[in-house]
Image 1: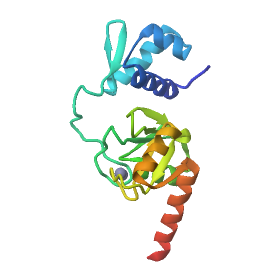
Image 2: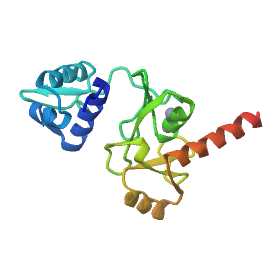
Image 3: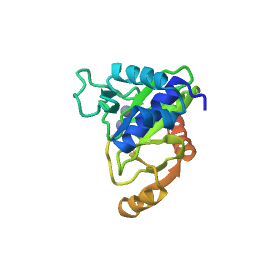
Image 4: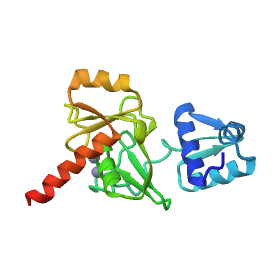
Length: 190
Ligand SMILES: [Zn+2]
Ligand SMILES: [Zn+2]
């Protein structure tokens, strides 16, 4: 599998989210690339403050330091929390971050070059592919932006939440469609 380095970095972060830590050999196996490539990717991630290398392995750098410069949402400017983060990666490798799935999907819908997006599972807190996530729109749980959109990696979890808190359960395409309609009404209402 010839992955781009961005692709591999995403895989490494996903793996660490899931497993907590990894040995170099784990990553060699998972990515199907050489030891050296893994080291190079880890160095980059470490420089970016995303991971911490330990002897023979690596862990997520999440809890290390509250970033001095708060990261803010590329849509609304709110500080980004890891619990509700949404990432949109563009074809050119640029990465947009959003405070929550609401803003993330807004970015996604206005970026024609959006290539790969990740949302944080609201229940478990790990990253899931935004494409395959389920979105609960307009439920009573307001975490960030309105209407609130919660993202889930599993349909079961999403349905459980829907039972408790209402809202409409949609996939990414439907969620984008809703937001587009909303924006449309907005533009014409002014
Ligand atoms: Zn935002
Ligand atoms: Zn938000």
